[in-house]
Image 1 (cartoon, rainbow, N blue to C red):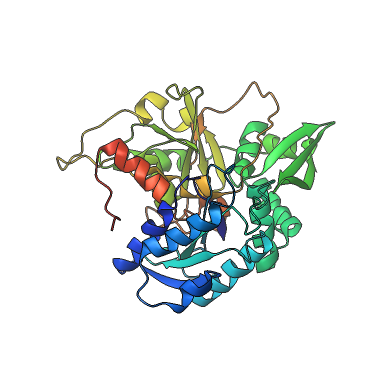
Image 2 (cartoon, rainbow, N blue to C red):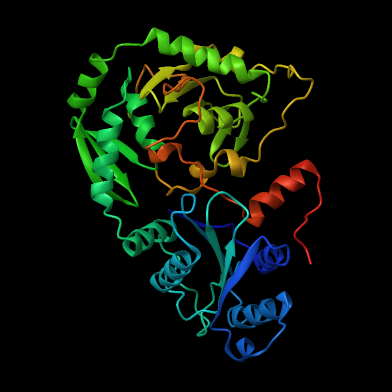
Length: 385
């Protein structure tokens, strides 16, 4: 389960975005909370909710971005509408918004059940609801509600990472960093942190043991290359940047379909200079060049059927990366930093079903992301009233 605090806004445009979902039968208004006498009226318009939120927000002139917009999503249908509603209300209470006016809306237009919450950051006393370490607290509160043991989960993830085949320390770090962990090496020990605190540690000697034991599966490398070759003509391989880094339509497809996660390496908005390939099905990590040179992997190739797939929405292709807990990423200097991507190993070219959270693609559909993409493509907004 994931939680994302969405882009700040000086206006309450998230109200219209979410009520637009309801009007188009792509959502359901589950709860109108703490709106006073307004809740006793019928046939309310989105502007009525906006007016109320603006009236509460007007009690402070110092807060420039009063809108508080949050999405809470589960994997697939793991949690029902009722479950999500209960979790969302407890989450608002835990974050200090229990007495605030807020709307709770279910979205049902993606593969993952999720809800949105819209409120104001200004309390009724005119003071701002605390946003100190807000993104980290968001996960701590959520984990407490769903009963997730953070240390136990970290221990499980660490053991799974050690089960991968990798050739450098940097590759080992990438496996865990992809799940939102931060690793810091000090005195021969990796400290593994998440949610703003250290949850586990491991001697670097154990990591080096796994590196020494690595045996490259040449047959698997050839299979991975064949998979990439098969789909290069059907999906655009040109990298583009998002808030979470580089991606491409091809790499997003390979990750979702086969568990082959391409981690591009680049900086300062310049084109990537390399990539690493994490094969979550075969539990192996490759330098990209071991499978296919970067220039070949990202080369634009016309579709064999005469049609070229457009870039996928970054919110879709990097959804999990954009919604996992934010972390600082201290890294040890590794002269053998990989410049490649991962591959898949299961049954031929069938659908890949991962058991490692890193490869789960959760949904993001906030108006900030979609609005940005529509502006980029010079398309009009559709969820307007």
